[in-house]
Amino acid sequence: MFLGKKGTVGLDIGSSYIKIVQLKDIKGGYELELFDLLPLPPELIVDGSIIDSFRLIDSLKELLRKSKVKTKDSVVGIAGHSSVIIKRISLPEMSEEELSESINFEAEQYVPFDIEEVNLDFQILGPKGEPGQMDVILVAVKKDIINEYVSVVKEAGFNPVIVDVNSFALENMYEINYEIEPDKNVAIVNIGASTINMNILKGGISVFTRDSAIGSNLHTETLQREFNLTYENAERLKKGEPVENVSSEDAFSVIESASEEIISEVNRSFEYFRSSAVHEDINEVVLSGGCALMKNFLKPFAERIGVETKVIEPFRNIEIPKRFDVTYIEEIAPMAAVAVGLAIRRPGDR
Ligand SMILES: Nc1ncnc2c1ncn2[C@@H]1O[C@H](COP(=O)(O)OP(=O)(O)OP(=O)(O)O)[C@@H](O)[C@H]1O
Ligand SMILES: [Mg+2]
Image 1 (cartoon, helix red, strand yellow):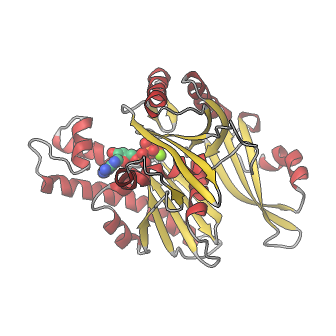
Image 2 (cartoon, rainbow, N blue to C red; image 1 turned 90 degrees about the vertical axis):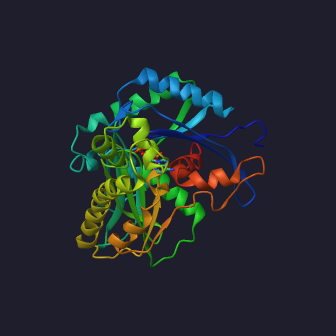
Image 3 (tube, rainbow, N blue to C red; image 1 turned 30 degrees about the vertical axis):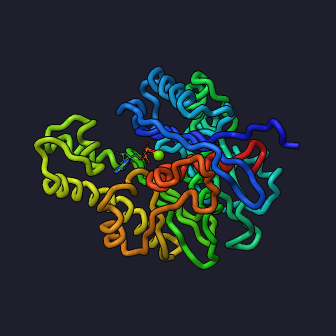
């Protein structure tokens, strides 16, 4: 029945790396069909907005060629503190159809933009809280940001079939890889180059999401400034490679202070979560994104946050065929987390 159906690819267009993942449905789970990534020159994407679409299209085309992907149908992820609004709201109980019809009206008071300027989506979480009320997750994404991404992806030769939000992709990725424990609050913290996506799951259901405009670029920028380095050399230093005229000890203390700032941002969000209406604690953190690859990040993170923290394994329950370089894939796996979550989506699913 599915012969000839090539499925979809997850396309995670980060500000520093584009990641592509394709998963094959196999009995009882997934098998890795394709995983590849390509670094982007700095400043093509700033604050989630595409600044240089021509060069981004070129990079996407290059990744398309390099990865030899056969499927053009793609699921595109969007992040962005300024273009994506995710809110958990309480509404009078109604059916999915009824809410579909009234969502524009209901959403108006929660979305700080003109309702005509956003695409709305929602998920009913069930009748909790007060009687006659239900909890709903409301998602609003600015149409112009969707159009920006969809048009570069199309120009590059892909066929975008779904646009998803990165923090939800992380949730889907988590679900297929980990046992959900009903009484446990798990925070997925994805630290990329310029964004932190946080999603706190209670028994597997999202109860808090937040994106912050800070990431591991802060390490790079601080190293550049402190030692007068090019972007490329600062990136090298950060990855533990030797760079002329800078000792690793000197680099270490600079890196440490940038880490401190990034960790504080996560801590502030956690404090907010703990003090908000739910009054609940966080039992575990899973860390993903390129920042999780940094030596000397996990330990200070876990110590400062005070919660058991582990690095995400996005391929934990995904079979990796022998033709892949498994050691390499496992090494950079935390960077694939969002793309894996996007690759799980299929047109028409919910
Ligand atoms: N081996 C490594 N050691 C240290 N840092 C690394 C390593 N590999 C990548 N990074 C850093 O991780 C970041 C890239 O991670 P990631 O791919 O998750 O970000 P992104 O998705 O491009 O960014 P964003 O989502 O914030 O726009 C870069 O800042 C890069 O320097
Ligand atoms: Mg990213």
